[in-house]
Length: 301
Image 1 (tube, helix red, strand yellow):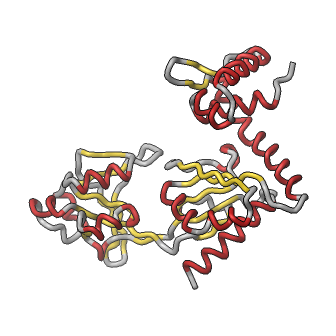
Image 2 (cartoon, rainbow, N blue to C red):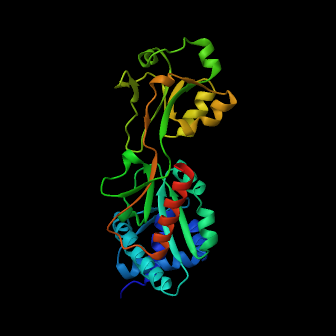
Image 3 (tube, rainbow, N blue to C red):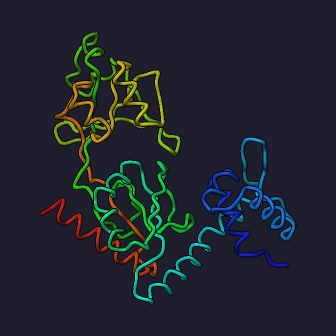
């Protein structure tokens, strides 16, 4: 017997939420209804899809393979339904965007609320993830990442004119340590480093007389969380080197002091990007047009 589409959608919701309770809230169903649906689905397929414990839900190997194939398939179904609704005249459907925390804030600044006031049936989902996510396998319409991280085959719309890195430290730290005058001086300091989603620890890059200088600083504190790195820096744990927007408020309040400003790199800012070959819904096309117009008026007018 073929599994029901509703049961497959329930399975995917559980897989993505990692919890029966959260998936039930998302789908407006009871956890017991989801549990019954999963037992029925596993029976029909003859395979265990979920590893259940009292505290969490994980995917089996079979479940992980099924979820990977289902995401784009169910996304295509949703898109097809949205296209049919588009023909009635009023825009509707869901636009799913994978983004960083900063990218989500930029999109909100670029007028998501205003767009949804004009098109109240269009749902926009911002899925925040520090790692670069494949749009197709993840079932996303678009993404927001720094321009250097955007695949070359994507259409990219700049939503911020540029970005800058800033080396910063707390006044208390600087009171007890000599002020670094060149990037190489950082080798004599405690530095707080960032581990990327791919496992690599960031090597600090500066610009010195037209050439890029790479520093692999010393330090006993490493984190994959930029807010945690900034918080540790405010507490005097050392020097950090992060995108400017993460420390702008602390610099303005005097909690942090900027260092080596003449050597700090600037680079292309975040972009909204999507596949050029996708067949967009009218809702997605309207959102892209709205974003282009808003960015043109806010950033480069």
